[in-house]
Image (cartoon, one colour):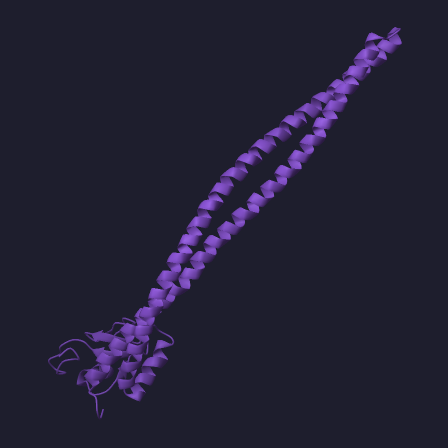
Length: 249
């Protein structure tokens, strides 16, 4: 290398990678924010739909209740008329006919009254359900609005940090050898960690042993090398008596 030593290049690449990993984490968190908000919004929407369904059930039950009340009132009027017929019967035939009417109306009235009680239960249960869900909806709405404000604040802070890191990245990237920078960027497209140490001949990216020839070249510390297995940039991070030491010296 003409202007910068290999050690300087590797240190710059490591710093660049550190910045890129920070940016990666920021981008990950920024992506999570709308996903979390979307999940909470989905719960809100689902709860709202449940409340609307309960309200529809309540309205239908109220309608049925009114219809049953009218039917019960009519049956009671018919029952009263049939009882009057029975009281005014002139013979057994009329009395038996009136009694049959009374028995039929009583059965129908009993069924109507049971149905009315069931409808009343539905109304009570639906009213309670609407109240509980509406309370829960208000709670979630408050959480959502609070989270929206907090998320905007957090996102703003992270975007500011990312902006500073981007500037620092540009400065470091500009100092790098064009070839080395190109190798790093190409690897980074596939792997978050593009540069790793080799310790006792083992690549710390894929944890595979480097071929002896590659490791011997690495110990010379005179050019940028890549792991033959994972293709990451590797550098020697250990002292080696035979090779004269690694980048850490």
